[in-house]
Image (cartoon, rainbow, N blue to C red; front, side, top):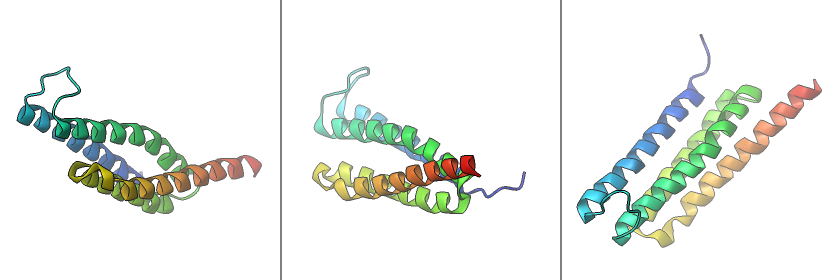
Length: 131
């Protein structure tokens, strides 16, 4: 199969981000003595847990629009927009871990990229149905 690998690489990178977020939660569990299944305790653990859950929630929405856009409009542009989404999510996670009040810009960046992927993907599907 000879296809553009960008969306597949972003899918793998998103999985790596999810793994790193889960590892951060695990590290905080050990560091602050939070035993499973507890999801509260030390404030930094709660921040790590929210980063993980928010990233998981966003990734579940991101991956389908990435692939719909890639398959129905452009794999190249899906890769660029997906890279912006991934950059925004990493920025969000790092900022949230340092100071939750600073997470907004990374969130906005990722949501703009997500919106472009969703709207573009929808346009690509509709355009394909009309031709």
